Length: 157
Image (cartoon, rainbow, N blue to C red; front, side, top):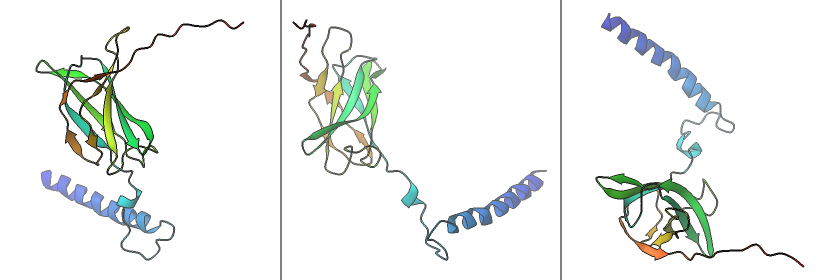
């Protein structure tokens, strides 16, 4: 019975293979080419930053902001969790090909932690890193508090 299953699987792969190759060769402008690359059609990979976040609380939102020249773009969001009693985070930071203004080699990534509860302020991590399409451990040791400004509605005269 196992031999029969193996033969059926092999036959199924043999049937699919010519279809896959024919479909790849049928792309516009690729007639007769044998070096067609699937990689060219794949989206760019993001950077994944992760680590501990001293000073953060479970459930606190975190946003990755990428700086490109004088422009800053929000390129990923996440939520702080806990592991073995420590605050931890993991966040995908999009590539420029996924969202304009996001990650590209040499661009700076900063992490902003939103207010843990209403009436409190968030903070920006002291540590930052350069974007690269990889897995990067970045353990954070607190940061600079973001300003809090109350606004009051004004009546027009």
